[in-house]
Amino acid sequence: MLLHSRATSVDSAKSPARAEEAGKKRSARNAFEALLPKLVLSPTLIITLVFVYGFIVWTSVLSFTRSRGFATFKWAGFFQYARVWEHPRWHVAVENLGIYASLYVVLCLAIGLALAILLDQRIRAEGYLRAIFLYPMALSFIVTGTAWKWILNPGLGLTKLFHDWGWTSFQFDWIISDDMAIYTVVIAAVWQASGFVMAMFLAGLRGIDQEQIKAASIDGARMPSIYRRIIIPQLRPVFISALVILVHLAVKSYELVIALTGAGPGYSTELPSTFMYSFTFTRNELGMGAASAVMMLCTVAAIMVPYLYSEMRPRRSGGGH
Figure 1 (cartoon, rainbow, N blue to C red):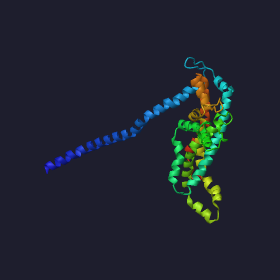
Figure 2: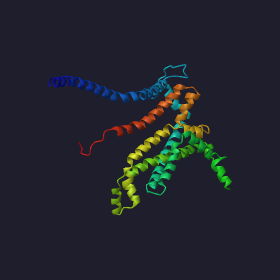
Figure 3: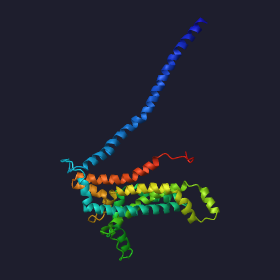
Figure 4: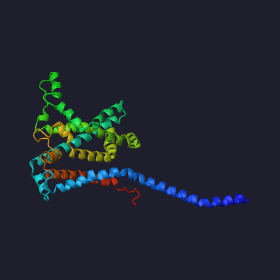
């Protein structure tokens, strides 16, 4: 009995120490688990801060200088921005961007919505068709531009194909035409992106409550009316998301234009991105190239910031509180 009581007293004396030690281990483990995500993400965060936002700041600083190469950094205020706006090539680039972006966005939305509605009919081989329509988006813009350059080449591609079929009067020479070359860029860009827009719309269509559609059908509404009054209005968030993505892609388009037309013939397919690259890396006018890059950044920010604000803003509950 005496030994048992002594053992019990020793165990009871050790219990607080063991509990304290277990608590310390638990606290250390919790602290490590809380720190681990920060340790894992910190390299990516540092790289992003330096090579994205750091270079944005550096480009903005360069845009206010008379930099030619890395030799001179004389402060110039808004001189480079004035030069950009007065340059005739910039006006051509902005005009081409207006044509290209407008047609690109409208055609991608129209074709994407039409393909999504087609696939939403639960047709046979839907999986294969969806993969075929999505495949172009898996290609790089360089590959797309090179392929379409061959297809649209007056001596090869479509023209040669139709000539081999005996249609010798067919001559598709848009790619070498000053007035029509920009439309070849639109064709290639729409071919690549319309499948991606289709996938966005198809996801939106599959998320619509089918009970509303059934109720409208029972009430005698025809399918065109159902799409116009019920389905398409509910796709508004998808329309906005697709619009933002497409405009963003259009503003920064570079690889496709260079691979397809080389910004030519002449400067007929010049875009702000090719203008920026030419003056920065070909003419070595860093200040002017940086000014055009900042103007492109402001254009993209004017589109993205309101969209991100609307998406991140907390939604109010339906109770009106």
